[in-house]
Length: 212
Image: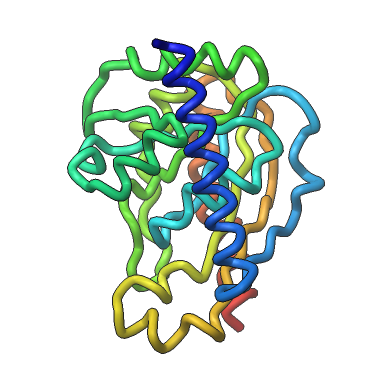
């Protein structure tokens, strides 16, 4: 039964990933920059800003290796995103919870070179404005897995946050993902703090450059 479930998840990922790629190719321009900065082997944490529901799947297809994402429990209530989270084997976490059981369960994939994605803002920015990076989830993750961190900037998805914007921007919009910097695995809280302080600065600088 477990093997059948794994096969169904793999099939679901293929369908979702290729559907997103086709959508981006035909309708909404999609560009990945800086993939050469991603190490060719080993596990990583992908850390980026959050502007749309497309962020997770698009960063996933940016990664050259299997990836899982940390997702808030509330997404289980959404039929569409529950399926996306199922297909990409999301790691559900409760806000403000100290339970690291789900993260320990994810170590199996990480040991074989998989990756984990996290959005420290915790929620989408419908205006595209960069929000505050919260430390709790990131620290909980790092203290469990101790992995290098790839900081990514994403932009464009917020333009599709409602029906009016979709109609206005669908054919002339563009979605960008850029890998800005890869940090060595932080070994203590000071190094974790440094990444969380520098990441928003790097991302904001890139957003300003794109939007100018």
